Length: 304
Image (tube, rainbow, N blue to C red; front, side):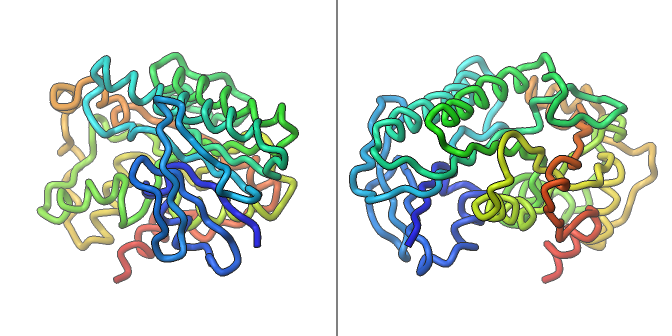
């Protein structure tokens, strides 16, 4: 039986991945800040990245490492302290993981690192791919440093893949969980000018990418984990309203940019700026999407 070591296993992506895995075929080990325990066949191991505490000796052999750790990007207003938390929760956890993996006699065969499309320049007309340069804002800087730590695993002879993840669509969490009550009470309108592009992905396709990466050795390097069809904020609002049987308001009715900035401060850049990101590279290694359009993705999510 092969084993999978996961950080960030209690987040949206981690939970979805674990749920999709047959733990009769894999030993699953999740690093957690809570107590070491076993629940429903999943092994939870306590760690403390800030203080460098992690013991991997209880795992006989680690075959795959999936690093999803990091404070939520939109978990709070971007104060100086919270911005440091966003950065160092990713840097410290990845550095500690590298240090402990390096000490192992038998190294894993694969390291998968989470990253984000926030790496790229905002509001571009052209689609950006993995070879393009990063943007110049806070998130671009975070992602660059985060990926730099993940790429260290290549030096250990470990096949390394990094997924720059777009806006994840799932009913279990993320943006849709926050938007649902707003749209439910007929308050869903486009934000700002509504023209900003959204590079998104259905949670199933993201999980399938990770699982396929475990199987296919062609996966190596950086990949954009986004659907082939980007969409504008205005179109996304229309599609979500339609699926939830809510009216689409006249085009002039939008949430003003100044009001969003007043409410959320610098954090508002996440919704007021667009990301136009290409999926071509991951398609060249043969990945097939279950949901290429926002319409099909939202219909699947809210089919029940």
